[in-house]
Length: 215
Image (cartoon, rainbow, N blue to C red; front, side, top):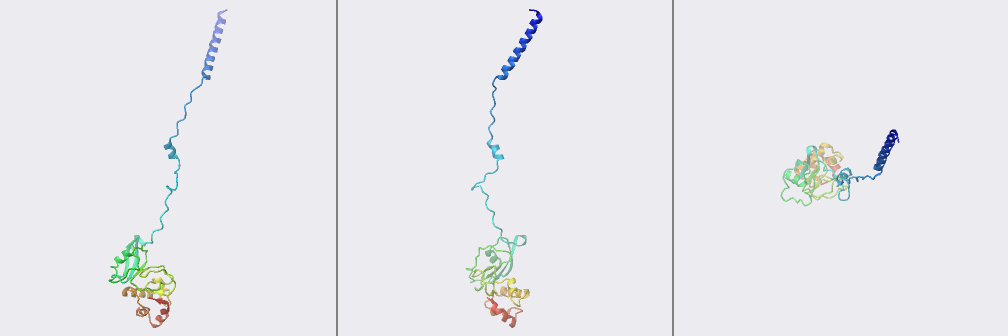
């Protein structure tokens, strides 16, 4: 054979060998790397919080007691105490705190009917040692000896607020204040007849009020 033919044949054989080698290499199986396991900590960070009966949020507490400006309350302590009058107490104070602020009850006064552990509210009145009587009509209730729930009936001179006294015929804000001042100074009304001694109440006005009020 001629040298040119031999050279061409050699080139063809080399190309065939290279092609065969590449084809054989590509047909071989390759190992595949297994995926990394999921990190439980990362899963916990991305997952939302799981709530059950034990982890459920607790209900929010009810509204706090009514307070006055600056976190204080003002109460009126009247009746048979050593220092009756208006007293300022910190928010959350109880009836016992109001009694201490008023100097305590006078000797011999029975405090059985007063709940001294009750939390006070701003603007409340506490009457100590007043004789039991029907509560004021529509009264929201103050702390007084004898207690009891509000019922309809005569307006109590010892328990009624200024607003309730103001609703009586012929009684305005000024006369209502005179009534409150009298019961504070004298430890309450022992009878309706004492209403005659209040400044501004004459015989005619007393006759109009007598059937509408009680001690």
